[in-house]
Amino acid sequence: MRRIIFNQKGGVGKSSITVNLAALSAASGYKTLVIDLDIQGNSSHYLGVDINGKNDRSVAELLDQTVSWFSVSTPIKDFPQATAYENLDIIPSSPRLAALEPELERRYKIYKLRDALDELEKGYDRIYIDTPPNLNFYSKAGLIAAHRLLIPFDCDSFSHQALLTLMDNLAELREDHNKGLSLEGIVVNMFNAQAKFPSQIIENVRELGLPLLEPFLSHSVKMKESHYHQMPLLHYAPTHKLSKQFSELFNTIDLETTKAVSDASA
Image 1 (spheres, rainbow, N blue to C red):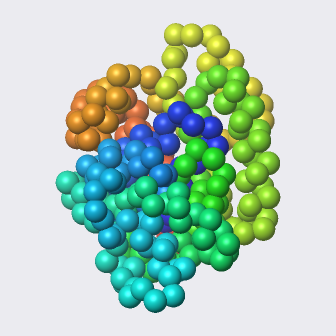
Image 2: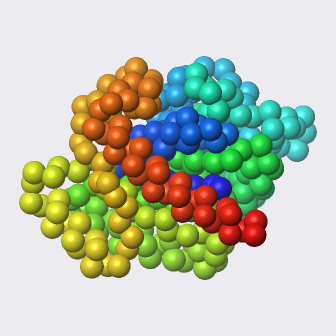
């Protein structure tokens, strides 16, 4: 099962949600892979990878093989790198993604990530895809390659408007490139239960008929601390309220994933 975490708006917690759900997946016994398509490399950093160091197994090298005429190809299965956590691997980001993007677009390699994940999925139970905060080549490639979509959402009026734009763009992409992509739900992040305005915004989202996943993830400094220590919350602060919320969220989506996998194999 391939799950992408995407929103065109920045600062909504895509990397935090990607890594923490992937860490819970791995701890649950699933062989899990994180794909970091964001040039900022936040998921990579969170899992202890320095994207500025020499690395010939980044996602940039993986995609570069599809446009290089004379390079010797590295087998797809050799790109995932182990993290400090059992069952959790990553194909990290790279600064080279910026320079590579125009060439990938010019040669229309938008389906190559999907082809690579078709191969990688043979060795993984769950694949989580982190994305840049805009609808560029890499986020489109990820959406084409994925089965399920989670949309991180913080409760302000700009996020609400961005969500409307995003849904229009996703409808077009699904129709043209990936009819099998399903919206798993909206993940409300950095939620302040004491304030009235976030609840008002959430009601507005409900009125759009979009699936809202619960629990809503609280705002907490523990998240920033876990980034600094490069440890997902499950390992950094396992008894914290936010860690428990992530665990509940994971159990909710994993139940649906397990049911879908079971139905598909029946």
